[in-house]
Amino acid sequence: MPLPTLPTELLVIIIQYLADDHEAEGSLYALRSFCLTNKQAVDTCRRHLFSTIKLLGDQPNVDHRLLERFLSLLNRNPSLGSYVQDLGISYMLNASLLEDLKALRYLNTVQTFTFGFSGGNRYAGSRRQWSTVPAEMRNHITSFVHQNPISSLVLFGIGQLTIPFLIDMHHLKNLTAHHVTPGASSVPSYVKVPSMLKSLKLGEFMAHFTKPFISSPSQSSIFDISNLTKLSMRFHFNESTDVLNWILPLPTNLKSLKLSLDKDFGVWSCSGNILSILQSSSMASLKSIKLRLSVSNTPTFSPFGGFIQELERVSGINSLEDIDIDIVIQLESYPDMDPAKWNRLDEVLSSGFPHLRKLNISTLVAIFFPRGADIWEEAAQIQRDLEILFAENFHWSRKNLVFTTLATGQVI
View: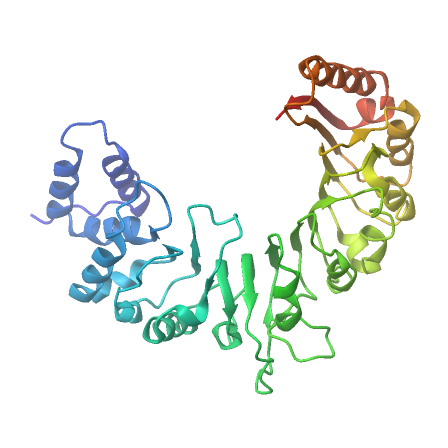
């Protein structure tokens, strides 16, 4: 008598339970038995187990032989490669890179790819030069990238990445890069159709990454960001923000903007450098902005670092729904506690922002230890003053918006 066919949804639930229930004794045996008695389950099980493969050799307490085992498994059963949709490969900076990546040719359905090098923290800034990776390995990885319909790419810790690596990725929509620098070569003339990105996320010191790969519409480029809907960029204290004035005017339909700026706000200001340089079409489509201001070497920080002036400029010509401002004040910097200057944000938002629904303001004043016997009381007093300031102001926002605040004084 043939076994009944189970709905795919039910199969997935059963397999997820048996695969994830590590505390239930005999779960692995039950999973094997279930697959042996139901051939339909075998394919579903493989699809579940192999859809996401993370071979994170740069993480502590991870068996670094996982990549070798996975490649060996692919060589024995190449058909398993058709199940992989999300692949992550990472190495320590000083890894020997002895693996034969030839088996990657069996993968042709990967849509999300993460690749890079780190010293245990992929955001720490270390890089491995692409030229120091064995030529055969570079070729296998580059071939893999071009033979798969990759729509999301995450790169980190790669120095002097050659431009051919990124050419002809016609499916690419989402690009994230942390501490990646481009090689010296220019964009080849045969690149006729650049990848149309929808999301771009760049970490610290990534301004140099953008120039060779992303150009104005009149120039040859690998990536076209004119239809970008999500943009996220981080800037280190010692990093020039001039790239903002070049890249922000390019998108025509931006919906989400996230900027992290570590600056001396006595010298640099948000005013004239963020919303006011967007194209009018992007300003009309922008729904969400998240701004993180890390204030350094600014003896008296004027509230919001000039961002209020930016909001004044776009009053009545915007579709903003969500504003999130996170302020970190540190390194001999102190906030100006004049309530009128803080409450000016509330006054500006009370008219000209008809779609606004949410406003969040978070402040952290960090005092570096040691500085004196009263350092703990100083931090506590700053926190109390900010809490009182928020409680006694922002009446319009509190009444008309989902309004949240957080004030923290901290000794570091």
